[in-house]
Length: 124
Image 1: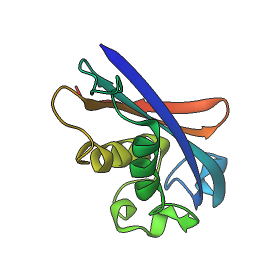
Image 2: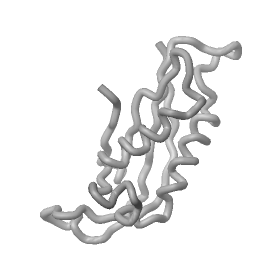
Image 3: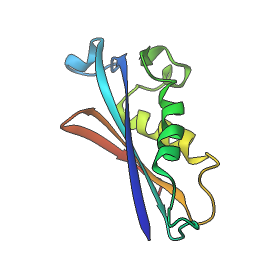
Image 4: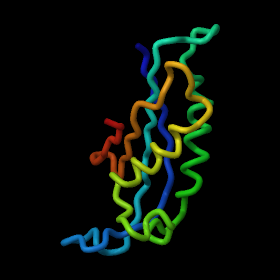
């Protein structure tokens, strides 16, 4: 089994509704997102997925969030734009990409809101 990961980033503001602390106020992050692919079969070049292809697909999704006020996005009108919810949204969007086929799939998405704080989403 092979596993590979790419990282990218975006900048966005948010606040957490009903949070009992500072995060209830508007603030921003330089979010870092890591996408992890997994598979057992390599292509004719000996590659699971080309790093640049996976990063390009990830960046297409992150462009939707870059320099946005996340609370105003439709997907976050009824749920908080937490790192957890961001990770699942990004996973759901990226996992249906055509770059995943056969035994190669998206294993997980990790979202860092700071260099020391992150969350990982992967399906059951």
